[in-house]
Length: 70
Image (cartoon, rainbow, N blue to C red; front, side):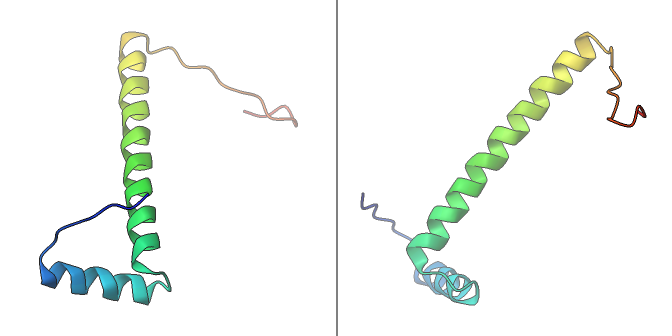
């Protein structure tokens, strides 16, 4: 799939330099950055949902380890 992106030249220079500093080509840098952002947003949503559920029912459970400690 090919995606076209219109950005100011100064941003393009910054993107290229960042990719170069991280030993990536521009496409891979953008791909990884977008995937990371999606993952962070998903993680944040999971956290918000868990926090909301905890506020509704603030019961906690301690899990035992194999050696019998909490």
